[in-house]
Image (cartoon, rainbow, N blue to C red; front, side):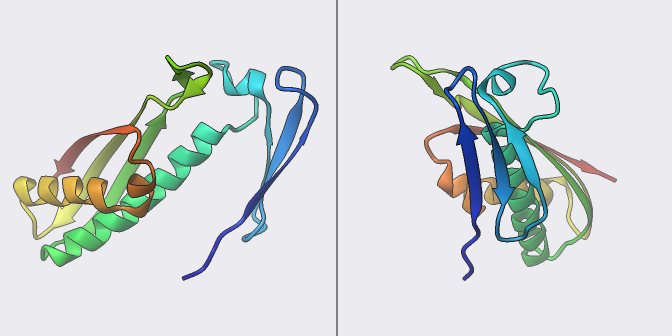
Length: 146
């Protein structure tokens, strides 16, 4: 299996510094990062580790759910997955990711709501990114559209 690489070049201190995150394996993009924008409500054109985790989690979950729907005899027509990753204070000091909220709305042929919800919950537990984030509470809100 392949290994993917991202690189960050950082200059300065935490509060006055900034950096660029490069998607080195794919060469698709370079994103600006800074702590002030990471901890602000308005990202100001910058990304953050939390947004990158949300992107990775939503994509991984969508792939895993698609596979599990097919294993259950269904055919996914569309899956819209949102992952919300927040940054919060750590009681032990510093910061932590207190939770991740996954939401999925699916259009699926061949599965009823119970079958879809079973696949959705199984995907939450079995997607590789969920497994990597086991120290964080992950919630799921799943809905099947007809």
